[in-house]
Length: 434
Image (tube, rainbow, N blue to C red; front, side, top):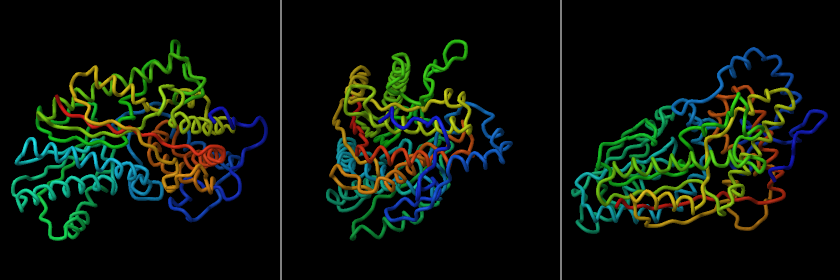
C-alpha cells in the first residue's frame, strides 16, 4: 500500500532480475524483457552526465500549453502505443454515446451537426470516437431516409497546443479508407475533420454552435497545480508527496478539491454557452468509488510514483526540494462530488451517470482477483502511465531520470499487485443542456 516500500537506509536499491526499463518493455503480453539499470549504475551514469542533468532541471514549474500532453510520436513509450486502457473505456461508453448522438440528431435535425472531442490526444482512440459518430448517424439516416443528404458532420478535435496533432492528421487518410470499406453498402454522411488547439478550460466555440461534446479520460486533469501548495516563506505543504496521500494535511486535500470544483464548474459553464439548445455532452474521467478522499486508485498510483521519486532522492539522483515542489495537477472525484457540482450549476439535466472499473494492467482482461505475472503487469502499468505523465515529469525533473524512475515505478507496482489486484475507477456522465 502507500506506506510500503520506503527507500532503504543502506545500499543501492536494484530493480531485480528481468525487470524492464520504461523504454525497453513492450506493451503487449509476452513482449521482450530487458534488464533495467540498477539505481547504483544510474548514479554513476548520471554523475558522468551531471552538466546535462543540471541544465535539464534548471527550470522549475510547468506550463499547461507546453507540458500537459500525452507523450508524442509513435515510439515504444508514446501514448499512441500505450493507450489500450483508454480504448477499453471508449468501448464501454459507446452505447451511451450512440444514444446521445441519436437523441440530438432527432431532436434538432441539423443540416450540419457539429461534434467536438475535447482532449483528443493522438492515435487510434480519437478516430474510434469519430467512426462511432459517423456510423451512428449513417445507420439512423439510412433507416429514416435511405440516404445521408440530410446532414453533414463537422468534427473538431481539441487538445492543448503541445498535443501531437501531426500524428493525428497523418492518420486521417488511412482512417477514411478503412471506414469507407466497412459499411456493407451503407451510405456515409459527408464529414469534415479539423484540429482545434486550446485548453477546454477556455472558450473554444461561438455561442450555441456545437451539438455534441465528448471527452474521455481528461477531466481529472486540473487547469493548474492548486495554488498554495508552496506555503508561506517557501515551505512546501505537501512535502514528499505529489498528490493526496494518507499523510497529506487537510489543507492539501482542500486545495485539490477546491481546484477541481472551480475547474469543473467553469468547464460546465463554457460548454453550456457553446452548446445549442438541446445539445448534449458525454464525458468520462477518473473517479473513485468511495467518498473517502484517500481511497482512490489514483492515490495508489501516484503514491507509488512518489515513492519511486523518493528512492531517487535517497540515491542522490534527485534533489529533495525538487520532489517537495512537485505536485501532479490531477483530481479523481467521487460520483457525489460530480453530481453536486452539476446540480449547483443549474445548467444541465443529468441523463446518465455510472461508475466503471478496469484492471490496472490494460492487457489483463480477467475478472478474477489474481495477477498471474506481477512483474509483467507492473511493467505494463508503468508504461501506459508514463505515456500520460512523462512530459510533466521531464519538464520538472529533466529527461535524464526517466528510464530509471519508471523502471523503479514498474517494480513497485509489481510488488503492489502481488498483494492486491487494484482497479481503475472511471465515471461516465451524460448531460443535456437545459
